[in-house]
Image (cartoon, rainbow over all chains, first blue to last red; front, side, top):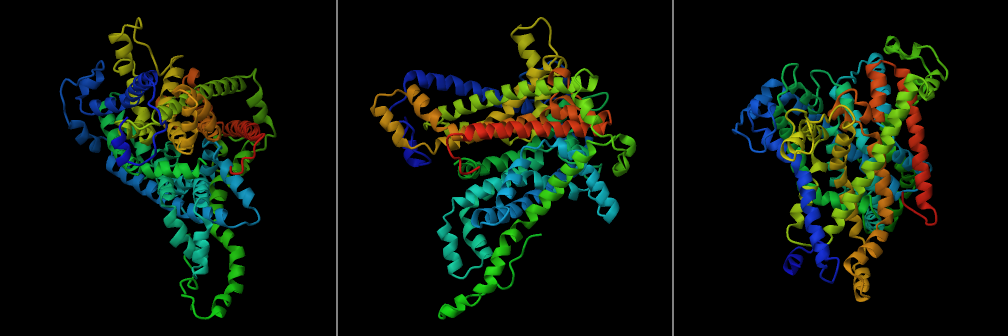
Length: 296
Length: 330
């Protein structure tokens, strides 16, 4: 085994002090190779098809494109108003993430550091909303937003605001749950010392607990953003032409006559790049966050 | 919404006089009793608005005769008592029969998908427990399905499953000659396997992530002791790794189960508004009953039944897994 790699990257000590047997090594090699192929197959299809001319993606599948073209990447912006969908998705997912992280930090801090009446009920409620199927809320929320709109004139239905509100609560239970675990792992002495030093409770939270819990908070933010960026059900019912997000907008590439598969693949790739890049950059935090938060 | 720090807080407490530190304690204590609630307030309000109130509305709707004529003024829809429920559980009627079928499909699908996700995720995590060259890169690759937005990934799979120009038929029929003629994957019985494939592809990296995290908590000494006692690699996995993962697996399986069971995005992007019978997952079925055939009352009754089922399953699962040992943290 590569002991130099272990020395330079002290992520985790190797599991076994003994060299693994050959049978294990071979099983591992075959298994991981197959798995890698399975995982990357759609990625290859996405990338290669996005560079093919239309007649190439309409005919029988070809592993190697007959001709390469970047035309789909130019056309995607005019076939549907992709830029507008992109902005909508960014605004909705960004705001939902920001709000959900702030709210979850406060709530998780309260649960982690204080004992108060109703704490158990609160954590149980938060946990159980995880198990509810989204479809359960769809119609009631639709009715609620319409009613609120009629009563107060605040347009929630069809607006970005309504979608932000909805998304932010989707990631909230998971975020609170994960952050409670994470805050619990921050030694209590730390913020108690801050309290003794004259910080208020909020000061202790912001100056001591939050900095110590950065990996958990980043993990929660990544999760919230991905949830909002990838949500389909509510986006398809609660948006109109102006507020449509990418999740619904991609359907615009299939018309009655033609399905522009090369453009669909190009657009899929374009909308995936921000989340995948962000995720891969921050995955280290996500793994640490899960370790402390979800798994103990 | 964000509770700004009250102006009283940034005060630097004079360090020299002990009285100064004690002085603000009294109002401080009052504030402290209310503080947890204040911190929880935004979360509570939102949960109330977006989860609890809609749930109450949903349950109310399930007792009403709610068709598209009443949708704008749903409060005025006539009460129908338990008619919706009776319709939903009447397994001899068309509605009940379809619901039962969809429910059974969902149960089988979920059990298969969760087992496969767990199996692949655990195997991959264990295989990558030791460091080897390229491990970091491989781990990044394995997380790609988790990171890709659902619709982008599933739409690619939909393309691969196309009858005429898809990769799957090209490989199975044109290249390997396994089938007599190109099969349909997105309609008919094959759609179940298509959905299962996509679901496993998308779901296993989460199991991988969680199990990997769980593996980090197994003390190295255990393996060392086992190795000294002559236990081989396979034995170590069976005797140490798998048993140590039990608490992690309990949370993981429950979360995977709930997510898979409630998944709407995958079948919706793969099949559209109504799925083929073989892959008619319950969330799509309810969506279709409500928004395609415009029977919101029955759709709500189905949702409530589904929720009850999930509550019972989760409760039973938590009871079973926590029996005999106290799981302090949920």
